Image (cartoon, rainbow, N blue to C red; front, top):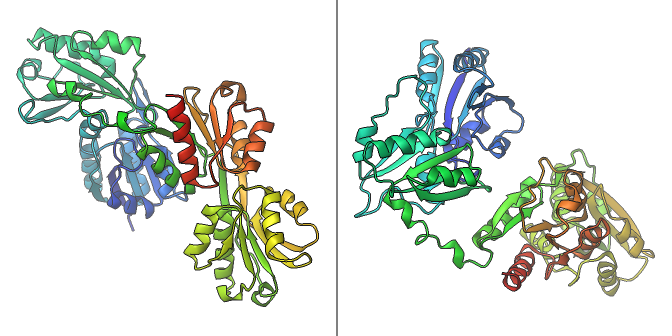
Length: 487
């Protein structure tokens, strides 16, 4: 039985600018066929699917359009549900219409899911409205990269328009575009902007006029992917820029937390005005098949959780073994407020945490709460934990590994950043497996917890600081304080 193809608009680049309908479609497909402009992080909505890259750049195509069409038909006839992922919207210079016709001619069921087009969203991210009362009552989207030798663009008509002109895929032809408009009477003083990597973490904008924009872009080394915006509304970008009022405006921060937990910290930093680069330096996998004895769990005097993942893995193990939380009779201890918060989400309260996290400080709090020779159940991962066990000599301890930490950064971090944020010693080590330390010695390195700070210093980072307390809020406050002193 033939499968189905979903022609999906995946938005302009920011992974949060994707529709719920698009996510649902991606999640149920067996094959993901994706373009160059699709943010790779969006593929993680379906990590088990087959991934086929068919991206195109100027003069270099992974597959021709005919080959892409044939691929979609082939996979669908094999009975697969196929997600054809396109940057922006599939019907705005995305050739989605062509692919839909091919699918229809071959009797393949298909569904078209619209996406947010870069023609509107990218100017918005650069504080440029495409329409504005009294200034631009229309906007016009034009391809900047024609496939025919004879141009179909009516330059004379475009030059007369009072609305905003948005050219997609046109940065290589910027000189032709600007020159053609001026030849047909568009004033050289008309405001112009070029926005590179729009809505992404590395978005860059350059501003000028029709007469100067080519030279400005050349000096700024602007390259594809970029869009061109021409019209009076471009001049509003400074007046509409409210990010300058935020405490972290103008700094680029690297969040090294794992993919499945980076979002909270990233959101907090962006709300404060920072540009955030998510570069996970560790990956976490909760273990399966952990055996637990509910009756045995009742015999411990204290339960110690070394991380949020420890709590999550432990709760998974309890559920897998159908063990009730009421089997936990002893006191609760954790390394910091974030772990305590997750415990409370599961109905476990009165957790004891140290003000400054270190193995010695946590052990002191445990000694204040329960006597030596008591039985402690310590929950953690495959890395670390020895320092805590050494600090708890005199207690009867049992350690349970509920998750595995893999160290390493998937992609390098650009040198042009201001601060690195580390939430565990593993993040520090994972970062340095991909990034040479000599490129980052002058950066501000902010750590959660004394063990993380000590590991960063031991491995050679120089400008190292510790968050006010072991929490995301503490990290944000410390970074804000540093920014205000070094603005």
